[in-house]
Length: 172
Image 1 (cartoon, rainbow, N blue to C red):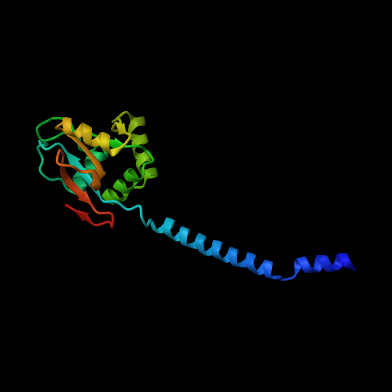
Image 2 (cartoon, rainbow, N blue to C red):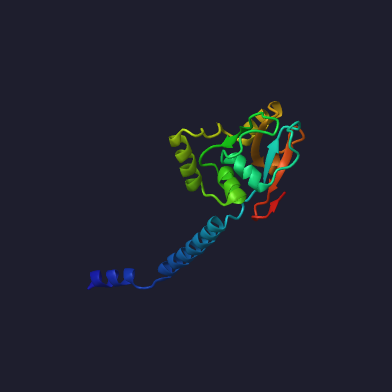
């Protein structure tokens, strides 16, 4: 009889069990809040600037022209000089956001596009750099280079040729 009583007391709703339920509720609410923040992208948005050397011969480019450059459709300047396209790492958030804002392409679709071009031998993808500071450093020294960076790191040594706003508005 004593054993049955102990078993019964452990399975009934005691004050300890109610406290555990409260902790469960707090964890559940925390999980919901974290999920919401992750799926809405809160806190990870950034405006992107397409930058060039101050002596770049073109004063402004449209979103369409920048898209054509980054998809290998436009490879040279009107002067005949080749454009040096600088690209970020394959899986970087900045790269994903850039192509989403520029032309609506996902990274999966973009990688498939470049794989098809490489396989056909038509063109090689642009060189990949580790971070935005490397992009700025190269553009400072190469007048025909073009790249994109987080707007927050743009300084006076480069010129912004197109600004992409993260709320999907494109300012030209």
